[in-house]
Image (cartoon, rainbow over all chains, first blue to last red; front, side):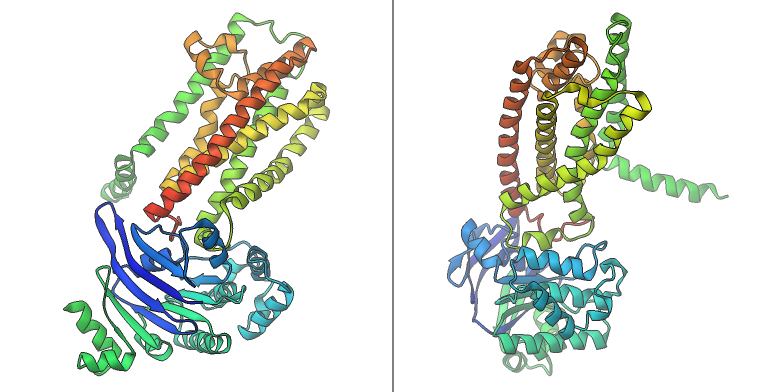
Length: 240
Length: 263
């Protein structure tokens, strides 16, 4: 599945959160969305997920306009999302949460799917524990399992490794990388972690004040701006 | 004990009250509603002290019926609030759930939740007070249906507010039903209200339900007009609430409140 954004705008009471966005993410590619806080990354992801109605423009998933309710539902069946600001019910066990979402996404052979994800993400030991009792690293892996429960063709990752220790962060990054390769998943990754973006993303879009100010591969951007790494490139672009 | 530190803690809460009109309204709301409700109850007993003579359990039956309404509505709201409190809200709206599926699922789950709460209370009535709500006979089912529909309608309306305005609308979830207690004539007949208020009350299905419950228990007669009026009004309000829910959802998408809605 591909994502195509055409002339996208979002205004909140006179404030332009997103201004004339245009980009395309091809099937099976991983694209990074970088930018300072408040630059419009979450709003953009919200519009792709159908949570926010664009003021103007179109979000096309596989050339389907998600503003049409029927399209929105059929697209959401093949999409999923993870964000550190969104959690799973704390009073439910890990297994119960995965069953709830598995059924919501109408996953076939749900038990097999849960077993696979538990093995892949090392969830077995706390499968019957309440989600609220887990450490933030464990919770993150459970949220990742939820976001993969429907074998999504599009995965939207909003700071997927925020607040994780380096070891768990590395584990999650490796898992996402392998998963995307194996399943040809289209991924949009919004992150403040430059090494994560450098490692995972084939293409990077830099956002500032609601606009994409530059884009290209990591090497292209570093070379173009005469910097030594992505972090310095990012700082140059946002401070200009 | 340092006065300045205690003062600091006090003004922390006073700032909160000063900065929020709904909080001020909330503080005024509860005593006002209590006074209105008990004022009408007192007036009723002063004027008609022998009204409930020889009719054991009319008030208790009405209290159970009102609680059923209360639980239906609160259960619906609670299911939605739980998602907000647990910060799971956004996960639900990125799942392939149609709005009609959300409303239907919450409506039936709310019924289950209500029954878990109300059935033990109903069972306790008989051994404790020698009263059974079953005395209302076959129409009891229709009265419960009416109250359940109205409770769900209120639940959908409050949920629409939560969708549109965010968690700040939460207080309305708790207070909406108490406003209806005095107007719905739960414990006294419609005639006790001032005439101008009767016009408003007549628009509430509750009035017909409770008038009918009293009529059955006191006079042993069933007036199906009341039951039909209540059901018709419920059907209208329920349909309107569903339309409002859809508008609120689209309003929330426009306003962006579906993203990261939490405590």
